[in-house]
Length: 279
Image 1 (cartoon, rainbow, N blue to C red):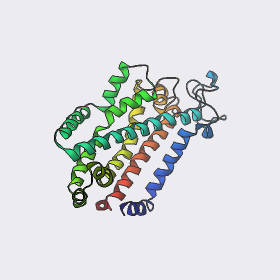
Image 2: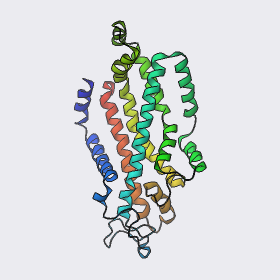
Image 3: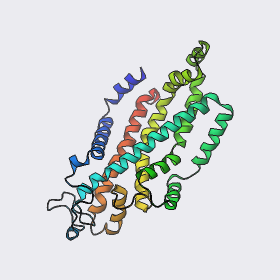
Image 4: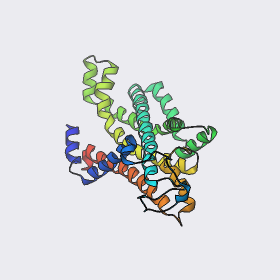
């Protein structure tokens, strides 16, 4: 079994365990921030402590508003993880449906799906999101998620379509068709399980890319807005004070980099484990 062989390969890789550990901590911080932070977002801030560095009971120092920076960074985890995972899940569902339909049936359906995919694929991810979000300034997490889903499904759809085209002509699919299996059964029971692995790996890599994109939009000032708390917003504020107060930029950048890098490394090792040619 491919899954069993892949797991045997993964559990022997230190990169897999390191990446999984970082992401597990990040997920726990996003789901249960009160366990890691003693204060809520923007809670008990004191302007007299503004921009003070680590020490004096604040392990990461204080931000521009005099809020405990460790607590702010912990609460900033949730938007990044939530948007990254939600965008990827919805984009993956779109890719699976459109890729299955277009790749399996071909013809007019495939042509229409391919042309629509080409149109959206030609829109730059960050630039397109910036234009839409500027046009609708009163947006929150779910509005950003919707915009990023609309711009982030094309690569997985193209890959899914290609995998379906390759799988649908294999002997076991022809045998199922000869035995009278319906198109729906063939797609769900035979084509999808054998075509999804590369798409799933790209989806894992996509989570890191979406988190980086979300942070970029926040940094540019078109994403989440105060009083929301996110790593991108913290980087936006810190850019003007980096020389005098480097902790303002260093800590959120460290957490953002570790999370994105962990998703990318995890996707790489899973890809290597699922593809026997790379072992």
